[in-house]
Length: 334
Image 1 (cartoon, one colour):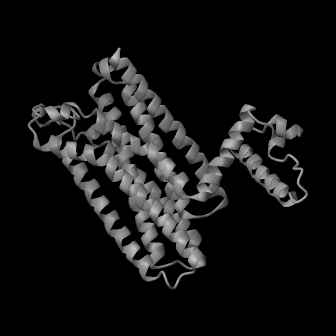
Image 2 (cartoon, one colour; image 1 turned 60 degrees about the horizontal axis):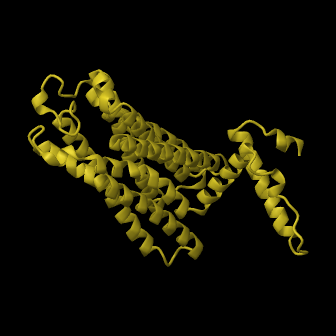
Image 3 (cartoon, rainbow, N blue to C red; image 1 turned 90 degrees about the vertical axis):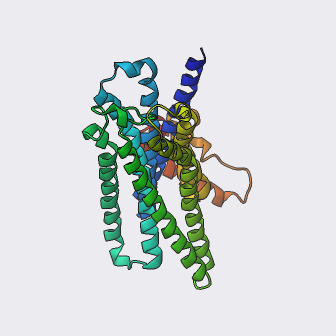
């Protein structure tokens, strides 16, 4: 039937998002182990929230339709709360990147305080998730309309309209703060463009463009759903026909979690390299290629340095396989 085909498509889409973000998360973790840069911690944080979004949407689809009527109010609120937690974690992560980028650009830290800054990032990441859990599960903790159905949202039937408005205001203020911070950073980069070395300037601008792209894509993907929630707040409960056809807006919002890893790969050569090394690990593990594929001899007399480079690259790949997987017998016997 038509509904079965739609569910199969959405399930495949959600499963792809989960696998995609899991792959990127492993690649980012490998970079964190070798490069103590705060930006990788922040990217891992966003990737984790995207992974949660894909998982929550997958669970939401499996527990929708006829399964919805078998859920208790608490389970229904938990199911929807997972998506709100993922959304809040994504927005707080974007704010964290904006604040840290602004701090490092405006007031560069001395080398001695780099480690303290790194630990501070971990503390702020933990704070992001704590706030996201609180905001996302407020309806489960009591801020709902179970006892007052006239105040219920149409899109989220057991959610109070006041909670929906509260969440929208919080998210809007955070996005506004992110826009102000990146505006200040952009002006600062242009003013100091003549003073910085060309290579450093290009690297900073490339990273800035990548992060701004992430924020822009987030607004484009989540914007339609935010507008629907605003309409939901001002409409009488279950009286607006527009609110009964929100599947496209919800799917567009979830699509954001599938686009972010692509943005990372296109915007960072380090990320592309890390993902490629991880894929090589997977190929070796699955037996799709042999270790000597990466270290085969070349016939050209000028290829010695290239062979050394390939051997070094394969050495990194093999190290990654020990980190994320069990040792490969084929590699050990080689």
